Length: 68
Image (cartoon, rainbow, N blue to C red):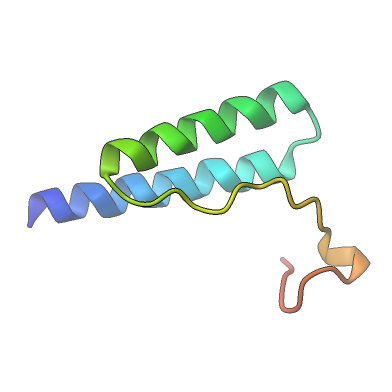
């Protein structure tokens, strides 16, 4: 059970890093956030999530239901 909790925590942390990557405009930080997220997912043994190369913006109407 504890291992399952660790996997979920690693997935959640990877998702947070991917969100940070999507929000930054500095390429160097975007790459670092993505690399950490990929490593967390690899260590957790889960499939990699979709890369954040999508440059959509909630205020430009890209992506239904996306917004803060």
